[in-house]
Length: 384
Image (cartoon, rainbow, N blue to C red; front, top):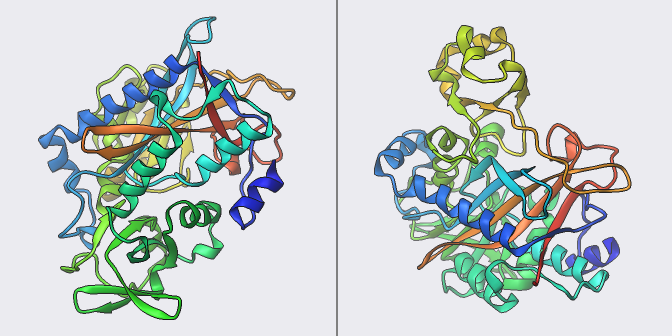
């Protein structure tokens, strides 16, 4: 299976793939999708929230021609069991992010797992959607109807990224090539890139460039996001901030753990704010990616040590243990279900679920080193 994935991608798979897919009743996937839409709506339908969120976007990422609403949104739920039956599960929000995910590679992973084990009695897409519908919906979100030759997937040093298999499959499925942002040339209001030896106009950017990385690396980009460029953005960097961990304290939903901005919490009294005290709290930087900077069970002194001027950049979140719902030869394993949404004319639609399995404190690879039956997986949906 792994050899087939690497062969079809044309590049090595450098992150761990779980030994098993995960199987879900259709009603479970439908409910997780519905709750995800509810959470997205609570934020985007609130003018008061959007005004607050606009204030957290750094000046350098305030695009004059951004998306009216984010095209891509990911909602990550940890799975908890509420009863003995296969449908007796709920989600607990881990985070949500207006940023693209592995829309290309995840399709390949699900199809490969289904084909490798001849699993004909499952489907891959929520709401009885088809593969053609998936390709059309995601393809339109990515290209906006432009010639794919004038659309680019933009990253930093893409050949060194672990997400390179997704870049390769994006080109295979939709004809959109990946470029290094530093190779772009500006010509007045236009951006250009080298395509087959010719400078080609970029009409739309499928942005995979994480703003946090731009600032952390101190990159000198060949354009300024604030300029009046004649370019469309999908996965625009300002939405990376507006829908993020910053959003969680504003949500009101039984699946959302108690969460508060550190700037609104007295460190000396923080333990009284959470039912389990600080031992059951996670301190998270708002805009770091892939789990970096997270502190489990912070002390009151640790919270107080965060400079007052930076406390608005952190949240304290109640830690809700996931239920190990996947049985494996190495013991019960937890699962995190990412519902991958695309904005359409009819609202937000969950087009594909993504699963991460783990037995560490978090689902990321760094927290599950040396373990088997963990890693990236596919959610296969029961037909009946």
